[in-house]
Amino acid sequence: MLKKFDWNKKIFNLVPFYGLVPIVIALSFNVFVFTGTRPLTQHLHHYDIYSKLDQMIPFSPWWMVIYVLAFPTWAIGYVMIAREERKICFNMFTAEIIAKALVLLCFFIYPTVMIDPQHVYSSEISHGFIGWLCRFVYSFDEPNNLFPSIHCLESWFVFRAAFSLKHGGVKYKTFMFISAILVFASVLFVKQHVIIDIIGGIAVVEIALFLAKKYNLGRVFFALERKLSGKNVEE
Image (cartoon, rainbow, N blue to C red; front, side, top):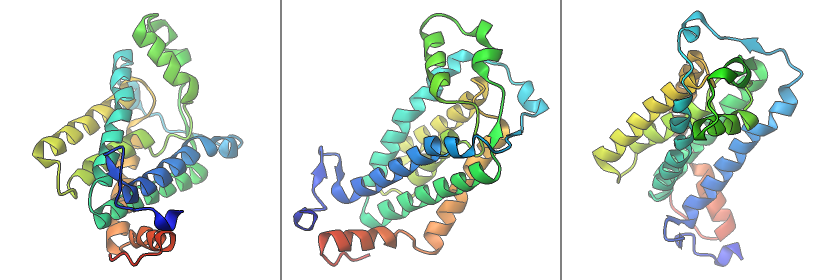
């Protein structure tokens, strides 16, 4: 069935099938790294890296709106990458997967924990929409396995990827940069991460982009397409 499928065919008129495959793989791996590692690391010693500088940053629940809006921003970034030509698309998503693999290693080698904002700042969380949004996020996003920040990783990734795209333009790049900076601020103001988590998120993206480009690791997806389609797809 896959061999007869046209890998250039647009899905929902948004992305070609060859771009959808790495999205699905990247998202699946992301789910495992974010949720699957917690049961495996819960018995390990967790380090508290909450610094005095982090203590100086006030809790501001309104920033939870920015924190949540990061998700559709990443979706836009993923779609933009998937719409690119194969080499750019495959290299970018390979870098994304490498970055998540580095996060996975960090979660096991240096698991971290911080204060639970839902308890510490309960008196500052309102009962309106913002309060509901905060409680909703805190209910499934526990304050552990924080370094590096996946939230910041994703925002920096779609921003950095914007500079490799052949479409998007200056406005798109500017939008992704501003979005990344706002997300960095949001994770601090809603007390989901500390400063070093942001630095770690940026670092793993830069390392992953370097490795993917230097060793042309996107060729793995070319090999996968050749195997599944039975066609000789040129890199």
